Amino acid sequence: MSDAAIAPEGASKKLHRDLRRAGTDVWACYQCGRCSAGCPLSGFFDLLPMEVIRLAAYGAEETLLNSRSIWLCASCETCTTRCPNDIDIARTMDVLRERALDRGYSPAEPRVAAFHKAFLNSVRQYGRTFELGMIGAYKLSSGDMLGDFKLGLKLLARGKLRLLPSSIRGKAEVRRIFRRSRKEG
Image (cartoon, rainbow, N blue to C red):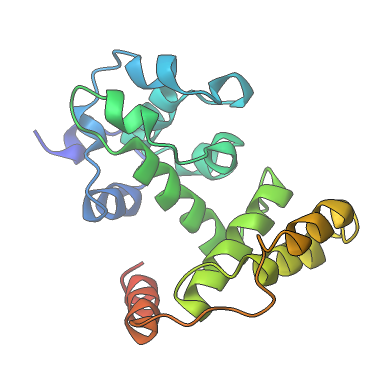
């Protein structure tokens, strides 16, 4: 049966296509609840993982992109591991986060979105995370410059944070992956 035969009128067909392209078949979910039962952060979500998958199947893009759940998901993949139908729920959350950013939605959790952006920019620029630069970018965008200053000094003193980014092989390949994902997204 096709998605169009089940999805209500007004459902986002592009959302279905993008999720399928990302390897997620939201129609395979029969709502057993194992994903939601195992999620360590579900108590903080406005939508449980199983509800996110059901709303994605219904094409309820507006509800999903305004949800706190997509921002609070830690991508620990417990939900994905527990799913008896191998639905990549963590990947679905990633797709929805990126979609919300691309469409200009105000993140329901701005500090989480600022961290997400700082992390991805760090990987895009250096091919891996440069923690000190990433923390600096996050602190600038969140407006909390001195909140963890003492902790930062301790980490620097113990050699846990590098002052300069380390170089890796394959940095150009990482940048190509980012460019390709932007074109396909």
